[in-house]
Image 1: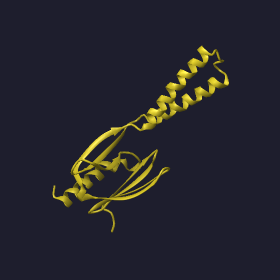
Image 2: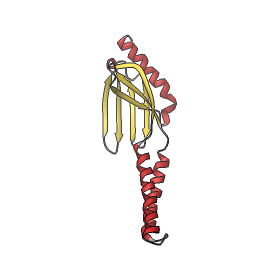
Image 3: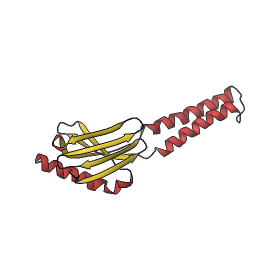
Length: 153
């Protein structure tokens, strides 16, 4: 059976491929940590879409690395009187620059569409990212239409 519609989400963590069928949404995902292949029955979902924006956890990790590096560099230079261009200070500064780059590349918040169960439990999240992002709204609207067709809501 061919899907009604498809959507591909690509993020730094990995990619997910969504296929909408008449009775379910199939999600196939790959990342460095795990692979995913799951189907969510549409009769379990509420037709209400919750939209939210979320910043990746890596943003905060990078920010803290940058801040900690700045503090350590300040202590090494002013407290221990180390050469500002020396190896220890330079290495610490490189870690801080890496944290700044990580923060800068993950600073933008990602928009998600969340489909919850009828009792409010989140069951399906779809991110507005990747090459297919222009089809994001149309895909979520098709899911809502199929949920309504399956549940009569």
